[in-house]
Image 1 (cartoon, rainbow, N blue to C red):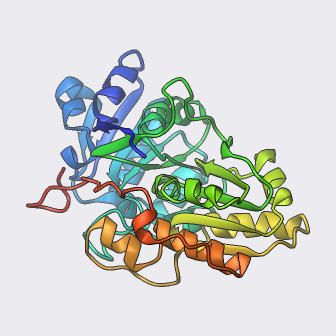
Image 2 (spheres, helix red, strand yellow):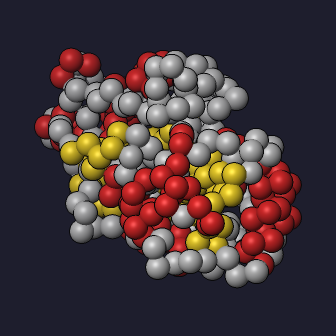
Length: 337
């Protein structure tokens, strides 16, 4: 399966989008070019603040700006938006429900930077924070259209953002919509719910599974909180053999847990299988290697389907659509593009 590849979808799009929004400011934590806002700094120098490697201070600074009517958009790697500055995020931003946008790049195991740089529990932690909206983009169309969605939310928003070379899976005229799952296919045998880069990975296998006669309802999730789109419940109820979730995150507290909560609260007894990091840290390596090593790839999806059905489908790894080599960092420095 071949998609259009969009290079740095956030960079110029964000500049154009904010042209008539003088209240929108950018705060960077020493990763300006790595988070595609170097050109923003040069275009709007008076609307850019370089905060250095001081994320706790950046949260307080952003809170002050928001109280004065500005809309700060914080740009750094996902992991640096919630681990060290969690107290400031909770007390200075989330508690007063301020309009601060946290744009986190390289979520999950997308970075070869190892455990210090891999945000594998961000959704789990941030889902527990009142007033927080959590979004995740899955392709270039969502990376470009998520701006309007976040801008409209009256409260803090966390975005799992993609950078570098990003596939365009969804049409340009089908933008990101808050709390609205995308229905990618329908069928009553299995329900597959994916998010972020896991959606593109799952699409390597879904056509082969369908070719084996399986009816699959496949939902792409871009809003992790709130998580009450009626289409999710309907898809869960329709699954004859079981439900599979697939995410670039720990299976604890993320998409799989959110689905499990919905199933439990609505007395849905279908088997649930969660694909993601299995209560473990990852390590530094390429995204392709890490997805295979930790069972987050299309091959793992086929194996989970076979386990639920209790039979082999005869699908070999060589049968799967080719996996794209994702260029999200330079060969010289893992932080850089």
